[in-house]
Image 1 (cartoon, rainbow, N blue to C red):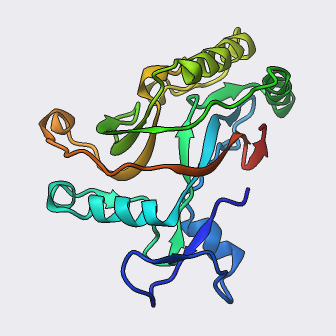
Image 2 (image 1 turned 180 degrees about the vertical axis):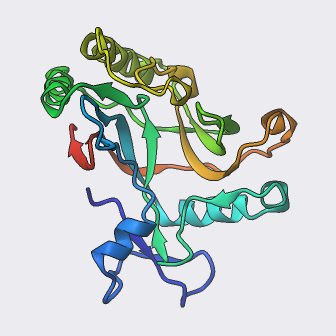
Length: 238
């Protein structure tokens, strides 16, 4: 999945480059990358993954959003940017989740889910973002995210999420293994909250209702693809 770009800290502030950094090991890349992954967790009778869009935004959009998150209304609340890693100087991978974590009995069961996902012959709608930021807790309420909301006025992304939800129901029906309901595992995803996380902080109860967040700049996706994590692998669907 070629969504990682690089940040040149020697250039002017907010300037990004696609040139590879010399000598950066894969171990370091994996450690500091924000790419979403599923995990089998090594438990018998449990294999996991989820469906998402891998999104690459234009470099000038990265600069605009990074500046947006660093303004006092966000930084004073303790939000950190998910756009650029300060250690590696890499532009982080961004994503839009289209499902919660899906838990099935085995890799064979999960491969059956992926096969059905491919059979949908998905035509991805145009990805557009609203000039709207929402503060969204994760299901277990350990983190609070700043989410750039997806514009789905035509309802096409809703239709895709509903199709994925139907497959989740089909392939998790009768699953008797361990799931973490507090993390939303095997739950149906709400298409009204499609977003791309650009900032995060530890969750504090009630904070999401206290934030007065200004409108973000207009952001356009450069390219995007549909993926499904499969344990610690990532499979491109479209």
